[in-house]
Length: 195
Image 1: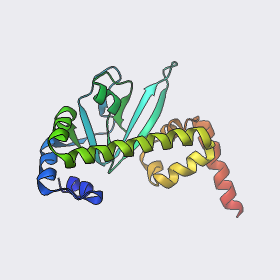
Image 2: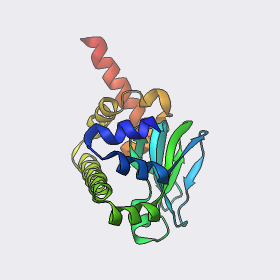
Image 3: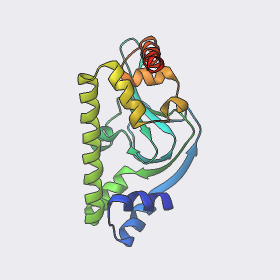
Image 4: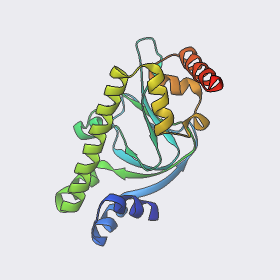
């Protein structure tokens, strides 16, 4: 649980008792690639803090194709937050694209703790703010950046992602086809060779 202490303390000066109370809510899990955390139609009860690995959230479009909404990597907290907050079934699937290590917390117990401990409440506010900013950034990038710029951005933000997950999943996250991604990669390689 040293990872949790380090992660929380990175940007927050929390009292030892607060960290202790938060740690009591969490349990460690180590799971294999393809492990499903949440299915669409299920009402989730847990949130996650990822230590190692890559977890995606995705939905199925009308044709049954997977559309990746988010990629979560080590150090991120995630979960079907709108479903957790509203206590409703998730519209998204969450699964592990690699072997993963994470901490699992009961959301309702966490919410109760926010009412008893102002420091946990402030931490929750920071997590929600971060999640909102992340979603807004994603919407902006999908709306304003062309496919090449989105690809360059993911390579910058997640430098090892191409070694961790298949190209077709990266293409889905970028909202392009695998063929388009292949062309983009080829064009960028050709530009580098010409320099």
